[in-house]
Image (cartoon, rainbow, N blue to C red):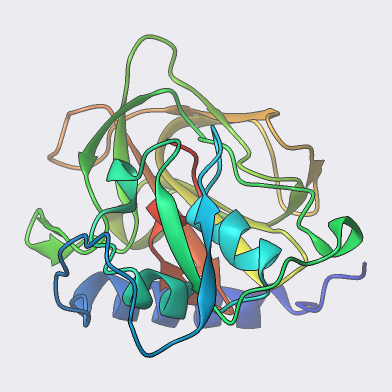
Amino acid sequence: MKNKFTNPYLYYIILTFAFSIFMVIGCATSPLAISPQAPTNIHGIYHRIAKGETIWRISKIYNMDLEELIRINHISDVANIETGQLIFIPYGYRQSASNLPQDDFIWPLKGEVISVFGQAFNNMVNRGINIKPYRTKEVVSARAGKVVFYSPNFQGYGKTIIIDHQDGFLTVYARNADVYVKPADLVAKGSVIARAGSTGRDKNTYLHFEIRKNHIAQNPNFYLSH
């Protein structure tokens, strides 16, 4: 598919503006408690979570809005959903296998999440997650796509890569020590694109990772398997 961003300078300006807004604006949704009870006034079915299944994939299976699925099930922390847990699907019906997403997101780095989406971190609201590597610092592409942006020091986040997945989703990989790709490169899911590092006064090594849909920051935990 042809990349719709044909002017690199214009694309840089758009991303700079969007990135700044996303890092400053706080999380608008209030915390919710997990509840096993389904609404009594809505007809629906239950879905039992399979191993490795994400909330995003479940929403696609039933052709349901992701945010609505989270809201109606009172899910406050998708990192705590468990295999075998029941999720209520209002007016639910399964999509055919041909309509399901074939390219789920994978973790870009094996490590510990030290700052979650919406959390205040270094005097800013985190619009992604920060991952501290366990051993290897290799950063991989979370999905297949095309590298559309690179900056050696983007908004103080050091070496930053943005990959366009050609379906409205972008992923952002920041605070890299080394980068192995360049704009216009096509990358496969799981291919090594960088090595996590540090930047500025914060000498701790971790990756800042974002998932955006139509340039709006999403909670990566909705899309990553736990």
